[in-house]
Amino acid sequence: MSLRLATFNVENLMNRFDYSGFRNQLHQDRTLSLFHIKDEAEYRLLEQGRAIAHADDMRQLTALAIAETRADILCLQEVDNIEALKAFEYGYLFKMVGHGYRHKYTSTGNDSRGIDVAVMMREETEDGQPIEFVRMTSHAHITFEELGLHNPQLSELGNEAHERIFRRDCLEIDVKVGGRPLTIYSVHFKSMGSARNGVPGRDSSMPIRVAEATAVRRIIEKRFGKDHTGNRHWAICGDLNDYRQRVVIGGSDHGGGYEFEVVDETVETSVDVLVADGFAENVVERRPELDRWTLYHTRGPEERHLCQLDYILLSPALARRNSRAIPEIIRGGQPYRTIFPPGQETGRYPRTGWDRPKASDHCPVVVTLNIA
Image 1: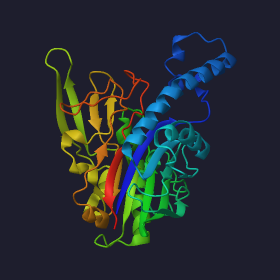
Image 2 (image 1 turned 60 degrees about the horizontal axis):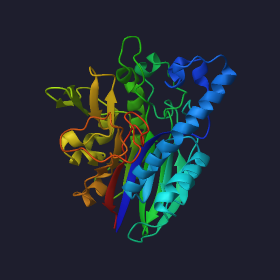
Image 3 (image 1 turned 120 degrees about the vertical axis):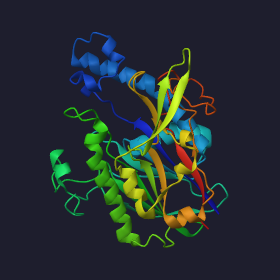
Image 4 (image 1 turned 135 degrees about the horizontal axis):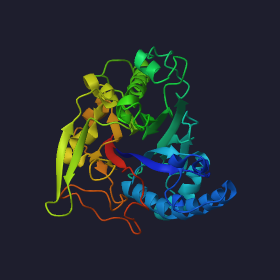
C-alpha cells in the first residue's frame, strides 16, 4: 500500500492585491519601479494589472509542477486562504489532473502578510486505497512561555515570552490511508530575512527557527512519546527556511565554466533539532550531496548557492519501513537563471522565463511511502 506525499512552497498564492509598495519600495515590484507614477490611485490600478498579468503564466507553471509530483497528499506553503486555494485548484490544477484534490485544509496562522500553510488530498491513492480525513489541529496559538522556550537570544530579537512561537502554524493533520493512521505536520518556519545590525539575516533569525523546530518536536513528543524506537507513523513536511549544507557556485558560463563545492554548516540549525538523536530522518539526504537542493539563491555572481529548504522528515518507524525510498525533486518549473550542476539539467515547462514566469522559487519534493 503506497502513498505519494509531497511538499511545495507555491510562492504567494494570493487572491488579493498588495499595495504596500506605494509607500515601501522594498515591497514594490521591479516592473512598476521603471515608471513614474503620479499618485496612489494610479499605483493601485497599475499594480492590479501587473499582478493579474503575471499570475496567469505563473499559476499554469505551478500547476504543472504539482501535476508532475502525482502526489496523493500535498502540503503547501504561502497560501493566502482556502478561497485562493480553491480558485487555483479549479482554474488551473483541474485542467491537468481532473478531479484530484477534492479535500483542502488550511488554518489562519500568524504571518504578517497573511500567507498560511495548507494541505490538499485526494479521496484515494493512486493504487486505489481510500484516504480518510480524521482531524485537523492548529498550533498557531502556542507561546514561547507555554513550552518554556523563551531565552535571551529571542529577547534580543524583540520576542516576548507571551508571544506566539510559530510565524505561520504547525498544522497537524490526521488521516487514515487504507485504514492505517498517518499524522502530517505541515510547517513553514521563519524566513531568513535581511541583515540586521551587520549580522546576516540567516544568523539573526536563527533563534526563532530553532524555537519553532523545538516546538514541533515537543508537540510530537507530547503526543507520541519520546521513545523514538516506537511504531508511530508521522511526517513533518514544509519549508524550514534553513539548511545544513549548501552547494556553493563559483566560476561563470564564460570561459572555465561553473564550479560546485559542497559546504557543510558549522552552526546548529533548526533542521539539526529535528534530526538529532534519531528523532526524524531527512530522507532527501538519501540523494547525492549535489542533488539535494530545492532552491537556487543568488545576489549576483559573488553570492550564489543551491540548498535544501524544503523537507519531508519521517518518523523513525516510517523511515525504517521505507528504507529504500528516495524522494524526487521536481525542477522543471525553475527559471532559466537557475544554475544546475552537471547531469541535472532538465526540460523546463512551456513559457518558463529567465527569471519569471516560473512555477515557484522553490521545487516540490515528493516521496512514495509504504504505510502498510
